[in-house]
Image 1 (cartoon, rainbow, N blue to C red):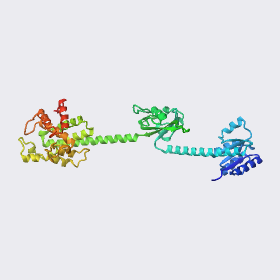
Image 2: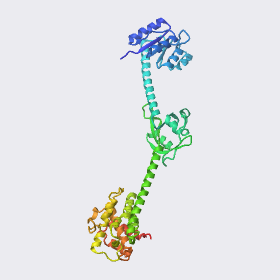
Image 3: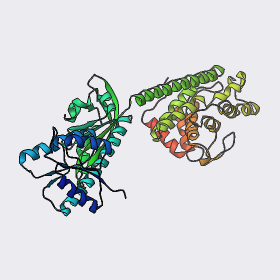
Image 4: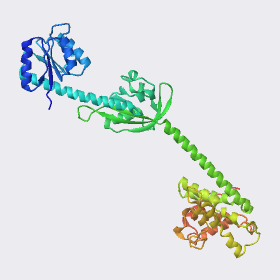
Length: 459
């Protein structure tokens, strides 16, 4: 381990030689002693000692206190005063230079060694703390978030450059002020505020640790922000909290991007709605006798889905699938679609292909729901008697099981080219009679409850 280098500043040569002898015996490296304050300043600048033993009473223009003040202003080196004078006025003057100790002449070796060791240790600790503070300050200056620290009373102790910019306040005007006079953050959640966040972390280190709100800067800007709060641990290590650090993240770009995304989603939904509407209209142009059928099926199927507590997205998927469930009929010849008499077996076989054709038309469209499969299965039946694949039970998509019930009710209660409307009562009787056989019993019950509650197709 390197020896600590000591500079002795003493105008009495015999005393200086005695101290030098003692220090060398203790294992220190002793620089050549000097006798004046001016020489002390020059020697300290040239040789950068680890510690200085400074006599207060020196010859020349600079006494020990003045010399120490100059040295301390130029470099970080601990100074221990050697003096035979310990009057109050002298000590008061010496305190300004932040000495690391006093040794009253005459002194013993043990006293000298102890004082030097304590001064060197304290200096190393102070330097380490100072370095950490410099590192922390540099880090806080460079990060992109605003940082504000306060003491327990809410008085601002530190404001980084980003906080200055965000709140439109200078650090020199903020430090020493109450937090609410420096930073105003409002429109937080009902059960939280900046004051509650701080009280929470001071009381138990928790509280509302992260919240969103609006920061109102001094230059009139309203800035959406996210705020997090953490406690500053006390220096005694006893669990006390000395203050609070607030980290304030500017959410302006996030909010702007979120709004743009929401608008994009709205535009996509509008485009989807328009596309679905155009496809629905295309089907009805081919089959004018069933005009409005798909819309009415969509109305009833969506209502059933809502009463079954399906999510908003699932209900929307059922509505879109209902609007497109007969899209495959554009493949069926118009004379079959509008034939005023019962269809032959061959014609009925051709009519039944509309589910598969609809699936082929829709399968390559990237819907957020399984629309093409729902369309394919809307004529399946619970007992396997449906078409085109003869699926049964849970093998049929729930959305298709809902649409099949709505489709049967609407079709039977409306006019068709080959028959007059059978009426709503007959339609409801059909699904009630075949509940659990052809049709999903839960879907049927919800459908019947709807009509008992007054549901009617719009004209």
